[in-house]
Image: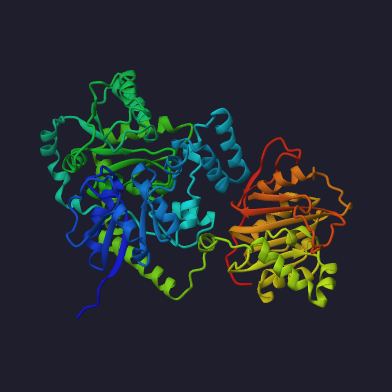
Length: 634
């Protein structure tokens, strides 16, 4: 008797949703069910799925939530794209870690839907701060105060760090996307190529003229096609301008825009009219699948230009190349990984328009060149995008994640981030602990030898944190107090002197307590705070206490307000701050401050730092991404 299949919970839209991600999963399901008991969770208002294998369970998210605790023990796979159809899964994704398939590297619009689009500017600013540090915060504040949102932001600011941090494992289609994600700090990334749709087997370029007759396309002209949503980033205007020039040169063609318009974003009809191409361009609107493939096969070549790129891989392009069509692409991002002989790749620079015109002219005129590129494209896709192979690779990722989970080897930074729900002493319990210490003969001696007061007397240090603890101070006795009062194993606490902070870091901590003289950072506060940042995991609690001993001689501003600004510039959120003892000490539990002490309770939120914030005398910010230190035990 065979053992039951491993259950796999997948969050993804399904057909008939007009969404490429829905089509992608639907094509995978017949192969996934060979090795998994598959359950797909869809949005509550989704239409009834069609063309899904009978042995696939489909739940609306409302049904999933009723039994969430039961389903949470199974591996989860989330298909995320930069569109509204994947928004419904975000709450589960962020709280129930799993495997995340990034169909788009840029998730700015998706995150925007959760905050800015519903008027929550504060959360949008926090999301910018989390990924881009103080520079992101400035952009968010400019939006809140002045309504200014740069046109570059949706394209250049990818807003994907919250999803990356929440993932146990990440799947992408390209080395470009994998490298970008690894640079942010997540190392568990698998590259699985986009599969070639099995439905291409039903269609052939041999029937080109038959399809043209059915679609009303001319048989005596070259047919050029751009597939999918008609968006500004697909450089349709540039294509129209080139075709205008070629028409003036006497070349004959029909340009088919085989997809749905986005009139709120881009008025393609105006550009068609401006170029005088009303008789040469056909806009089809949304296409059912059969006509989609017929338009592909009726074409002589495909223009698939995307600039800027959101890190996406085009399923439409995969289908076109798999059918043997020559394609024109921009040599950027994932499209740059296509072999040079398998597509006509254009550099996007000041000469792009001229290069595009030459490329279109060559393909219109040279039938043999079209055929050569198409043959190479088909061979490459068949060798790299066979759906049996790509779907098997998904299964291997799922099984490997389960092995890691079961053997307790999962120890990524994102795991640390998810576990950071902190506990603190109640005031009564804290005072009881302090009173118990006061009864010991060694306590008065210990208190006299530790650094500072407010970092421990204000009860701001969490208890019960799992993972490494780092104490940065001039006295090793601070480690003893941290251990005795807050119940941390002294052996798990690493201690370093603040004047040695610039030495290379070898481990990351979940809790850092820094008690240092202000002069330790007087030469370059950002450099000091960046060194602290490198030593802590994302979401770590960092207590920054600075003792003002009167010996500071700094070349930059070092007032308390300046220091708070530097802390934020170094990738921390300031949750609370103290300039002295705030708790009324009628029982004389705590020693009096004999020097001024500034204490900041912070959380690490970003690896992006501003190395030249206001107060450094620089005319502009200098942003840098701090290196990632592999998490390990001290």
